[in-house]
Amino acid sequence: MEPRYRVQLKIRKPAAEVFDAVVNPGKLSSYFVQAASGPMTEGVTVKWRFAEVPGEHDVRVCRIVKDEQITLEWQAAGDGRQIRVEMVFQPLDAGATMVEISESGWRDTPEDVKSSHRNAGGWMHMMCCMKAYLEYGIALRAGGAR
Image (cartoon, rainbow, N blue to C red; front, side, top):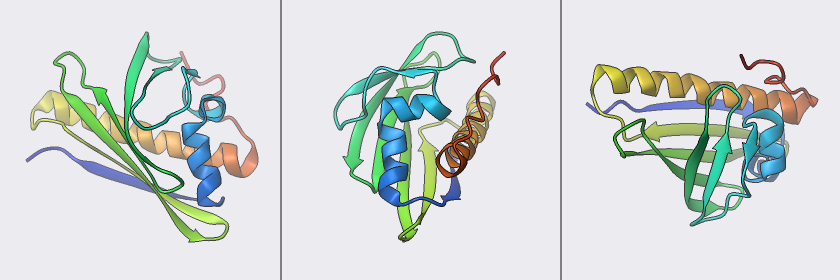
């Protein structure tokens, strides 16, 4: 059975603001990545750089539905497979959004199960950092890299 997961978190901001915090490289680099090469638009590949992980990482933007959904793909370590990331922004009311992130494309091997669990934790961390940034103006990742 293919390893899959879904994480979610309520962010007390409107869906348009939460969505923009992901697609806008200036905002994304305020709480998640160290740098993003450009805005996420459908069909482009952006490069993300993380303080904790060496190098740049290609992120292909497969689908954008403004204020509702982002679908990304990136390469699994070493073998060229694409891992699919789906982000859904569901308005709960005028001032709150449920963000759900799921990832698929992993094999049922001990290495991939471990990698998928690591990524699930990473996405949950990303959403917690986004929540702190959007709701309170706090940069949780600041100083968190080795």
